[in-house]
Length: 60
Image (cartoon, rainbow, N blue to C red; front, top):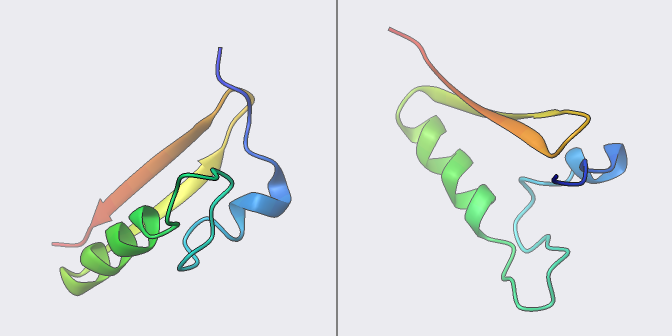
């Protein structure tokens, strides 16, 4: 069972250098979103009761 992401953290997940892990750089999700946007797609996070759902939406 994965713990849910706190609502106040969901808003910050894609910020560069934001991390809750002492060993993390906070760049992974930021770079993923930048790559998605560079390819006319959107990366979003939907908070759930257990963990989170990341959605990549591509426009055609």
